[in-house]
Image 1 (spheres, helix red, strand yellow):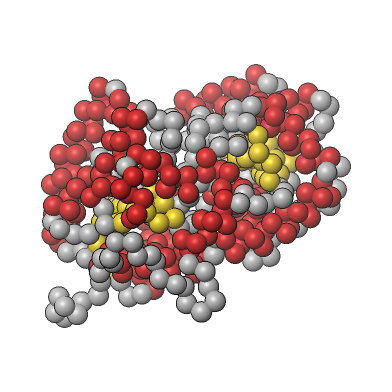
Image 2 (cartoon, helix red, strand yellow):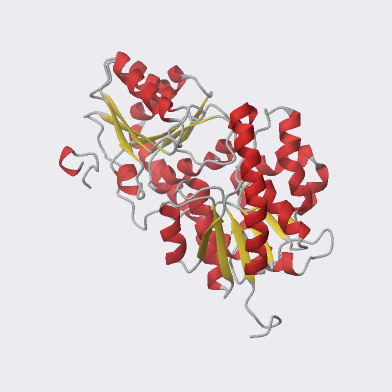
Length: 420
């Protein structure tokens, strides 16, 4: 087959091989491109559960040592490791670009600047998909993270918050940045929430166990809620990032110190979170730092459960317009406990509101709209549009995913002892 008629080839660079928020979003990007006949190669720094999912969807995976921007580079050992990864990654990255000859390089995070540089050195257009943004970070750090984006053909963000942070850093990026709502597919028929909360109230946290996610705040909130004499239990569904096992140890110590050994349950990482959401009453998203978005808040709503989220950044967008969502100040365990108490007190109303909110969440985060937007972004990268143009209209009766940003401003318990 001649180069002229060969299928479009896209190389996706991704910083890990797990199955959390940005990993799952990237899987839908892969599916969007495979559906259109594009050949997709995904460069990963190592093995993990993401690999099997990628290959099942038709992508080719390649392990390629890559420098990833993390806080560890602020320390001598971390900086030295980053430099080693950068040197090795340059050699392997150039080799991979030569072998795969991609028409577009799709960098699925702001933390992989080397891939942007290597692609542009070979005159390959680059799309950057940004899932993170912290307005409160020092200006020098924000500029360092955003500078590589100046080399990109286009930038995709998952929220207006992300887009605003990027644009504030470099205003020129505003015209090439598009907001595309994360694709999140909930259960077709979620189990209805319990009609009566006479027994223990069941709370659940789903996601990475980390300090920035406020998991310890959730534990303290449970202690405060129980201190009022009301029965409650908290289920933690997720695990720590490798190297942060100390935080898991701290959580266990906190649970024991608060006398919650029979009230807080650790379930580790779970590929399928829906049974845990179905078995709970209220979903907690207690992040203490800014979030680019808040997939877990949407997942809770798609499960037809009330959610309590920190009143910050992308979590405001994730919960906007949902009558069953409550917002609390980040890091405030007492406010979190009070929000749970309000939902329990108004349970019949909030239970009904959550069932209605599910329909809105399903429409906002439909897979079809997301996949269309990703295919459009790749198509435009191949044939750059004149300055000031926008993403084309969505086919018959469907909204384009980038328009979703305006709306965003607005059974048996799986932890039953017999199943563990």
